[in-house]
Amino acid sequence: MDNIEVTLPIRLGQFVKLASLADSGAQAREMIEMGDITVNGNVETRRGHHLHDGDVVALQLPQGEIAVKLVAL
Image 1 (cartoon, rainbow, N blue to C red):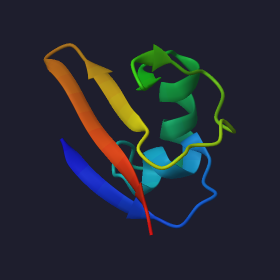
Image 2 (image 1 turned 30 degrees about the vertical axis):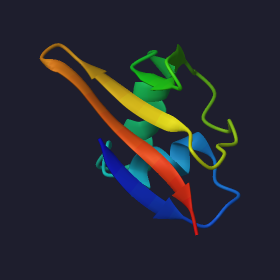
Image 3 (image 1 turned 90 degrees about the vertical axis):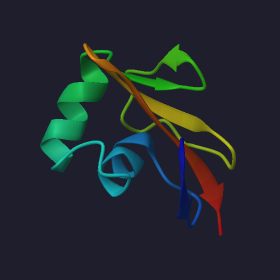
Image 4 (image 1 turned 180 degrees about the vertical axis):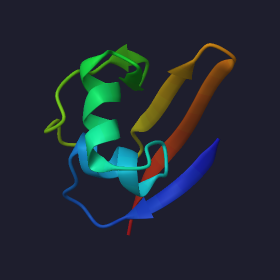
């Protein structure tokens, strides 16, 4: 799992794009709305969900999971 350093506050949609889990904001929105993204193991479908230091954001793929941990600067 990779750590991504960010300045808080940050919303889930912004973080998904920043962490390169999505190529664009539109793709991030679609992945979140479809339930492909989890925060700390729970499906999160709100793009505006505020993340906190230490949260683990994961993308669920057919071939496995890609997870990144948010680390506040």
